[in-house]
Image (cartoon, rainbow, N blue to C red; front, top):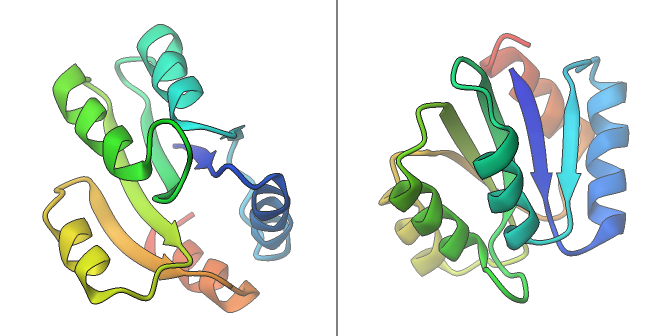
Amino acid sequence: MKILLVDDDPIVILLQKKLMEKAGISHEVTSFNNGEDLVGFLAENALPDEDYLMFLDINMPGLSGWDVLDTLDAMNLSQRIEVIIITSSIEAADKRKANKYKRVVDFWVKPFSIQDFSQFKEKFKL
């Protein structure tokens, strides 16, 4: 399984990587600062038999996280891509909307902690 980080804030990506290291998650991590680069990467580089777990910010300029999810569905990719929404939004409407996407397996509100990543490691057997 490869891990994809998608957030327009490079500090958030750095924090995610550091917390993963501290939690003992050693899977390959690829990061993107926008949805467009992520979609391009998957279209050109995703291997058919590779599984991906994506940490996706929903509030980004250009393609929002919602746009990314819609685009992935439209692309009909053969890869299994599961998504954890990462957001600063505390709106219940965002959580309800996330639940409508079959790819979304969890919803985290920033800030997150080492405990979040430790639980994540256990849940996904990493």
